[in-house]
Length: 110
Image (cartoon, rainbow, N blue to C red; front, side):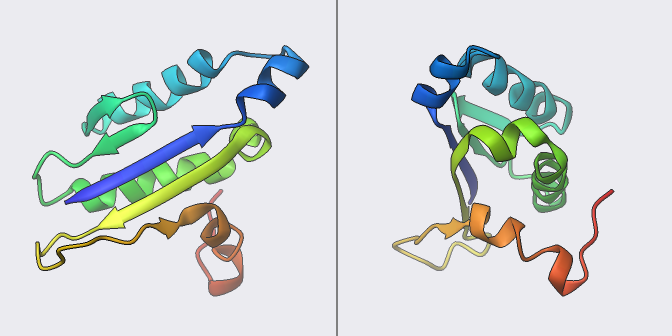
């Protein structure tokens, strides 16, 4: 199972009045649909069982890394990975922290 959970700072979005939370999720939803991956509900996305799903998820994560609006408003991006189905309890990996490390470990996204 692969799962990506994303949440935005709704108070900051309302205060700045530049966009809405719905607009931000709609941008991500379009990318998920094109991948194609599965939307469970706003901010929760899962694999479809296709062997390429992991690659597709990382493509979306790399795309989000480039988006200023994502860095400005995202407060949560947790990644769950149990492709082998061997874990009973999955601990999330905080991808917001990891995004800042990508450039330093040689993963360059342009």
